Image (cartoon, rainbow, N blue to C red; front, side):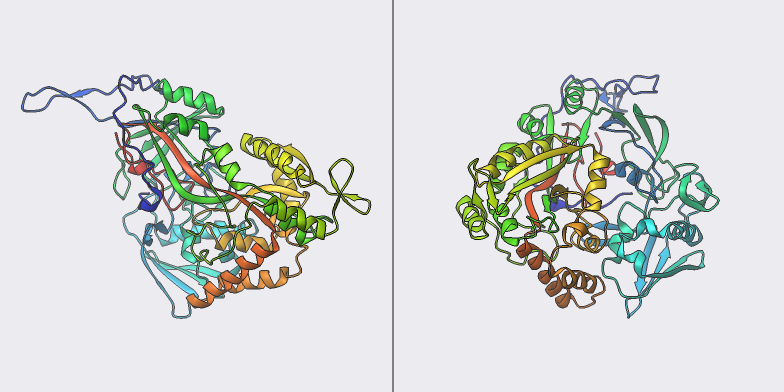
Length: 545
């Protein structure tokens, strides 16, 4: 699916440099032929010119996994290549995709979509309103899995009055409706013939969509091959074949790029700051950085006996040197985060006063709260030591580095910080159940922010719900979030957002660290590398050599 690139995410950091000279293309797994470009002899008899390459070698740190578009295990960049949704989210708002256009009832509760004619799944099945309904029926069958999207909680029903018309009815108006329909999953459409007896909750038989690419071959934990969908209804991409190699190690990926074995590294967690710095002035490779996509943060559990005191939470805010983290760990590539959401996020530019780095203020606040330095320098209150545990994802080198830094910093104000890493699934399980004092997390990022991140705070989706249980104003915050989601008045919605974001900021539940950005390093003859409104999409359909 060809989405409008978000121009504001393409700052001057994107460097168009010289063509990559003498860089081999590398072998394509599963291919018997050379990937070297051929030549074309012009009709006028002039010197032959190299043919434009039509194959791209991409890399990811893990396998594509389960690409069922109605579940959450698969790699989102791969799902974006295969599947499409009713609408696309663009820089300028929403545009039709599988739906040409739509109408919304005056009360905001009924959406009627006019389905694009002449669209087929890559297995030859027609993608009409009946196929769209079959997908929604499969999603609704597994509704409990998708209630993190408020739309699922408000859904009354869906219908297909005819092959060209699809209708969604809600119990209340819901302003993020089109955003949720336009994100990668779960509202992407798969061929009904690929479902298992009309269901997708227990898996699918094949990964068949309407998108610009089809999956032609893959070997688990080694590679996957995507080929251009020659029957695609929209503009066909210039890149005819994309091979995705699996290379878990960051340094090995960089070495593969240098050797010409891959053409593109893309993703906020795929490239470290050292690599970006190394290639900023390269004559063979280009670098691209997006504007902020999400916020790297530490969540404080207000049910913890120590962190239940707002003064302690606010002291930790003042003791966190975000500029030092930005400069020392990210070389300034991730800007210091002063608030839970960047001011560039819709509804979030509300003039909140940041917690400045001020260890003297932190000292005063802790002393005033009754925490007195003990003989070993760690503060005590009665018989209790000011001792906290920070949980991080052990698969993240960055989180471990930040943890070690904060451990030293917090000791300066008399806080003993014990750091503990767990593998990703265990880390997530403990976060969701509230089994932590402090834990690393990120907000959901664009286009989910702020609405989806806030909506999920009202239920045990991630760690937010558990962390906020000690707040006196938790019920007020939750009610205001619910009111936001069904608001129809733009001014009222902005006031509600201001109320919620101000409360969370003053309650000091979150320590924002840096604003994450999306990153790419690629050979300089690859054009069209940019970023879209969906941070997990790699816009292959825009790329060409």
